[in-house]
Length: 60
Image (cartoon, rainbow, N blue to C red; front, side, top):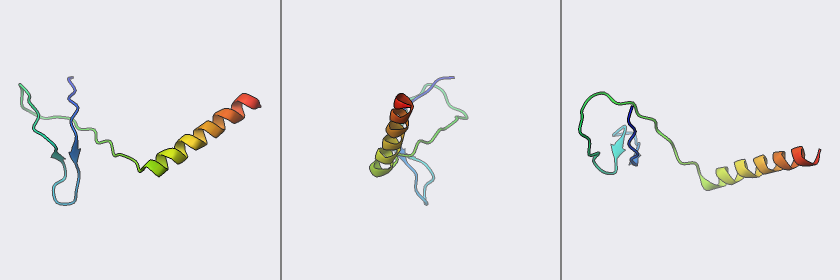
């Protein structure tokens, strides 16, 4: 299996729109994994919780 990293957009009218064409030497079925970017505040909260948990483990 070969992987190609590409950015795109998911919206209600066009399920998946790539930012640019993919230059490939084969055609056929593909498997797509969609990673959604999380809002920065949510990422900060996740990191703060993880840090606090690590600190508790270190000092207990």
